[in-house]
Every structure is written in structure tokens, then in C-alpha cells.
Length: 152
Image 1 (spheres, rainbow, N blue to C red):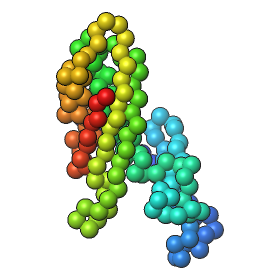
Image 2: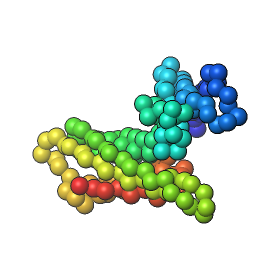
Image 3: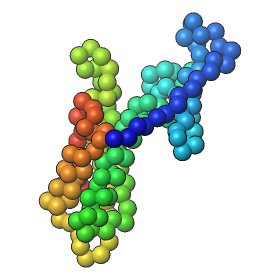
């Protein structure tokens, strides 16, 4: 098995803090050296205490589901002889109440895949590729969130 780490850091910048009027901006650092500016979502914590320019945990959650699905899809398609030229997913996560607690209750993946050559999967094969990708996705297997894949 493998281990995956992230370092999350936040520093108070002179804000009073106890009144809840402090910046939620922080940094995510990963083992490859990349740093990502993160914040609470402005839909949850109003600006100026959050930043729309930063990634928020809800967006990252949706992106991780989409990214995991895509990576399995690419691998499975290649093993089955399909050449993928592009894969674009405008994934959408819905934050709602679930048993009186907020959660990302559903994620809708909307992948658009373009293939190369004469070996083009029909709708049934494309559906099977997405089902196999979903069934193998580590992230999808780790969450309670309903995940829908819209195939076009």
C-alpha cells in the first residue's frame, strides 16, 4: 500500500480572531513541492474572510473524484485499445443537508471524451468503460457521496 501526505498551514495576520473576522486563506503543500492557495468557500464564509481566487475544500473534493475517475478511464481505455485524444469533465458537487449535517451529498461527472482513429467506442462500450472506472476509483470507493456519471 502507499501513504499520501499534504501539509496544510494557516497563520493569523493580525486579525482579532475571536469575532470570527479572520482570513481563511491558507496553503496546501504537497510532496512534489507544489503549493496551492486555499480558502473557505465564499458560499460558506463571506468575503473578505474567504477568497474566491483560492481553491476551497469542496472544490478539491469534487476535483479529486473527477480526477481519479479520469485516470482510471484513461488506463482502462488504453488497455482495451482505445486511443483517447482528450478528456474534459465539468464536474459539479452539491452541498446539502444530510441527517441535519452539511455534506457534499452528490457529485455529477460530465466527461466529454474524444477518441482517435477508427476504433471508436459505441455508447454501450463507453458506458462500460465509465462503470469500470468508477468501480476502480479509490476516491469513489472511499466516500458516501452519490456519484453520477453523465455520458454524452
